[in-house]
Image (cartoon, rainbow over all chains, first blue to last red; front, side):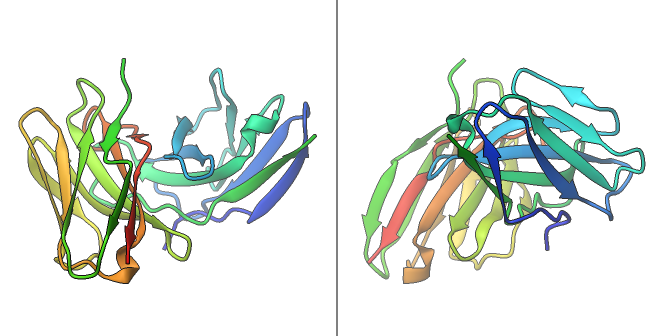
Length: 112
Length: 112
């Protein structure tokens, strides 16, 4: 079973910030939070990952709570091209012995 | 730098046949993982190869096998195809085992 829980779908207006939540209450100390997205019938695209500190890159920001039991992916100015299924995954970054398990993800609809 | 490439992109086979899919990782990446994606089961991990050795394996029958070559290119083979093997097969490469994975576009296999 996936170690994360995400809402099945969300809507966001174009141009607004999209905030996608993820619960990972059983996360271990050595596990990172990864976010990927998958546009219909394409391979998943890496977005961002983090351990405990908030992270930002050209695509998104990742906010991880202090207890690390949940996180939020923020797309600051959503466009129609951000319509996709977003996956939150927890995985040890080094010497991984466990398999990466993808959950059902969140289907994000960007509304014009 | 070129991304992960997978060949062929589309494939149609009949039950009982076998199929071989190919994956070329990003240059310099030594780890290759394979996933199966179906509408009902989502993204499921098949196996991971690192330095020509299978490092991790998912819960799939022995009909699913793979290998990795010295140049890090990988192939996966499915023998005695079943209708339920129809899926998008995704390959992901990473620098090393446990590092961030980057996915290819996938091979869509249809079994008739």
